[in-house]
Length: 499
Image (cartoon, rainbow, N blue to C red; front, side, top):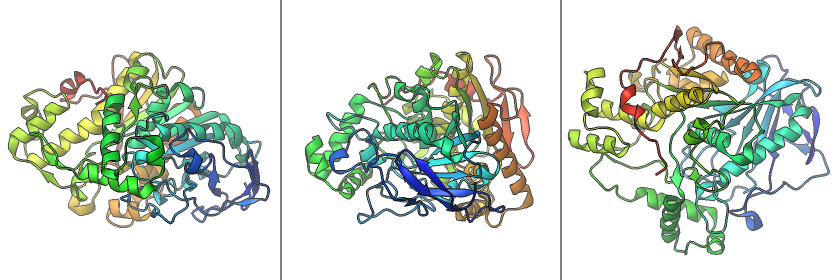
């Protein structure tokens, strides 16, 4: 597609610009395209409404504003109360031309359902577009705006935003050279949780053909828990739990109230730690009738190819980058493990596998398994058992940053999969400029995403009912015919039920 090419969408004509990251100059990027109306004023706490059309050519050169949020992720665009609230925007990278039928990858960012933006440099789609994909990245409502329970208003508004963006892709992506019949929706962390929820959501059926889910969190709330969380947030904000009263508050007041709820002292006998978020997708309503794990076990992903996996040391990102963790001996760690359904002998089992680990190391291992790794494995097994097609991976490459303490941490996969090792986040994780072996690993991961989005086959065998084949990403990759985790039986009985 020629640089600065004009494209006609259902909302009006837009003009993009050549991506400055494209070595060939062949990639055009269109930033800040509205896919829904600003979710404030009459649209506060409502399902996404159509974006107003425009008549002049819209210059889509700059990213749109992020959704209202508090603490920032590395590289994220800052949000402040003076920023525009017109945040339901998306971005498109393409080297294809209208009339082509390139595979489409739609990216849903992570961030614990409370932070993040499609404009983060790590998510730049240039390299993937050069590989042959049309790439779309999406902003959606976060925190209370997107996932807080509001009486008389739809739950899971962030998921509804994502589905609205997918409908925009269905209706418009052909103009960018993409194939609306070959869409892969991808995400990491909360983004991966979102795409699995979309797989289980009746309102998103038929909008995508494939799913890529990295480090899938198994965290979902019941309607009752979501109501209790919102009551606490409303109380902290000084208003009743009422749609009209809440709509009178500026977004920053609800952000402050959420921070107050998260800062409340933890109770119980477990590890003392401040939680990341009090929000998660809410199960039990029309948008998400049942948890994704139960839905895929019943065949909800029938006809949808799935690529999913996790990193070997997920939780180290959080403990090494500032999360305050207080572990008062074995009893506290055992109590925390019991809260996720693990048996009394869990520490002995983990120590047998990690004989040199101290309590902090054991905490990282258990929490990484509890929040991401084991739920992702269970999903892969459930997909295969239901007759679905799933491919599984694990990232074993260890970050050299911080003296190697990060290990194969959460989010380490992202600069590799997007081909963006030379961003600030990529350089931080690599402790400097990428080495040739890092670039080769990135090239292989980019190719796997491209091939999977094109055909449903990333280049290694699918999971079966008999064996969980796993691709192990490292500077020298491995393919294991089955995942032989010595702790798998511990987690096989954990229900991963909504809390």
